[in-house]
Length: 426
Image (tube, rainbow, N blue to C red):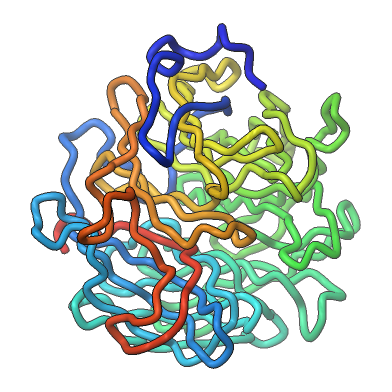
């Protein structure tokens, strides 16, 4: 646990309603891809939430749901439309934020399938395309938009099975192959490409190395040249005093200078990355959170706004969203915490592109099929559950996906995962 003295008085003295109260700390600065562009401007409200959900009942399909996200709307919190993709394959990642344009990429990971969902009319979403393997690259996982509109994709594996790492692939906006490189490197034989962060200003990409099938334990990050996807270096993360801080690298966010970055691990460590524009990239352990094992928690997706980092976190003592001031990346400071009641385990979070709201969904192992919205005060970093975002007629915050009917027709419950707000002009 974080010592009570390190928690702000506003956190200690506040009790949240039903679902939330306060908890834990995390570290350093960042700039989430495309989501943090308007940190210094007045917030603008998104009209829609796009929720990628995995069917739980055999015979049902994974689907993309649209929720009315306009707080001034009479239908705020209502699921207004949905579109099935035609298979049940563990709905997993979407893009981390809604890109410019009308198409959102999502994947059913266990099926190895990516779907391109057309959201030009949020009340009538449509599947505009799909793909699975691209040559020998299989099981696409994460997506990042590049200048010009192409998409950088991490593929976990090479060929059938999980015998070799996949790599990085650049695809055009329709999913056509542009270029790709395998990630194999004897420096870390257990790596599997997980998430990638492009740095166009440096002609670089940085990627992480967690195995989704939990058969290998990656302990490195990789540095690539963006223009031709040449692998430049694989760097093992230094171990910390716990001995497991370096295991399963998860997500990377850029710092304001665009030459350094912060990497998180699922084992709840924060590494400051430097030298990304040189031949000698490096990693420095700068912060950790208490962590025991994956049965009781992990550190999942982060989001950033200005100088604040928000982290999804869980361990044996509870689960939380944590807000940190990361003005000094070597001295992060906890400013607020929201503890989630059982059986909640926050996993995916995404920041409203030009606003102050965060969408939150739970870990795949959680029993809570619910979408929450949390507000981040851009001046103080304070976190507050949006209790008005709820199912029509319900007194409980959040929108449940424990249902037997959807706009696309009758079907059983679904597990929300990748979720993003619409751009405010949509």
